[in-house]
Amino acid sequence: MIVIVLLGLLVLYVAALPFRSEPVDRVPFFAAQDVTVIAHAGAQGHAPPNTMEAFDAAMELGAHVLEMDLQLSAEGEVVVIHDGTVDATTDGSGRVDSFTVAELKELDAGYHFTDDEGEYPFRGEGVEIPTLREVFERYPDVPMIIEMKTDSGDEIIGAVAELVSEYDRTGTVQVASFEASFLRRFREKKPEVPTNLGVREAGTFYALHFFGLHRWYRPPGEVLQVPERFGVLPVLGGRFVGAAGHLRLDVQAWTINDPDRMVELLELGVDGIITDYPERVLEAAARAGRSVVGQ
View (tube, rainbow, N blue to C red):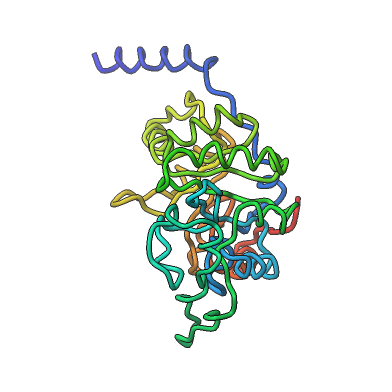
């Protein structure tokens, strides 16, 4: 009986082979190098996160891609800050979307940043919360991962799509979100712009890859930006990376700051490292025998 069942499953597998999903097209600016160095909120190990100071530091330290977080101001302008409130990074308090851009600019976005000695080198130095418009204008040709946060509601989807169109950034941005519904709506507006897989979408891929069923999965995005673990589940393993490679999905690990772990992940075959310290990825890539120079 067992033999008959196994033969039946084999027949079904062979019959399904012609219907396997086609691999996705890789994002050109990720495919341009063997290892992509992605600066998490800029080089936030060296400067206040999501600020021009952090983005400048990231570029000086050799990052290929700037990663940043997006919220909406009171008047619906896209601003670059992680939390839904200003409390964690500035000298102010309250929801981001309760402040106008002008009011946000009055806050000290370097207030809470500390260096290795526990000092506050950016306090009172004029560090501001930037708008996405300002970031696009300052770095017109730099590839970016721009993450839509959900705190201010789904109005951010249209606002981000409009700015991407206005600045013609289709070929130099990848839009990200944890929320799959936000990503689906963004893809409807801008299908030509690459996206990551949201948590539920990545979870579907994760479940399917255990049984080899990822071959029939049609990814809604082009990139898997994943942590080493999701709760108690280990995510980044050889089987996962191999399955993603079968569909040409980029695998980018976050947030990795330990150099030895970077080496292990690069030897495993991940395509990119999202880190607070871009310079460490350069060193780890050399140790792992991987290149950060354009292919």
